[in-house]
Image (tube, rainbow, N blue to C red):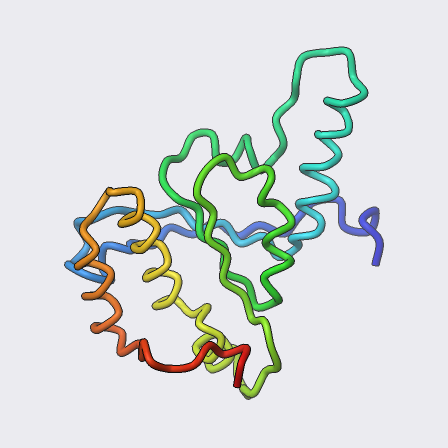
Length: 164
């Protein structure tokens, strides 16, 4: 499939309350964008802009990713049912901390829910990744991360999924 066949990425926007992962719904709200077409975001909406900036004689343009993130704050967490490399394609255009979770390895799951849990890209692991990124930025105490890991029953001693 070429990029011409799908000129726009398929976006589904939802809001979810990560704060519910630790202490009710008072901590913070994250905006989740679901780009079903990572390589399309890269080709049509980011490197095309980079090319125009390199060859153009007008003012610098921002990529789609830069524009979408310009009005938000905090770390960006990308979780995909594909290998991390898909979400990594837009890293140069993410202007701050960028955490990528993906299904690197061989699947052993009969449902998407089990696949996401096995490869640590389910909602609980996304919440922990977001909390960890915020803790690393000093926005919340590390104890919040540990609390979430305990609450969700995440086994710290489990081997990384891509090694089993």
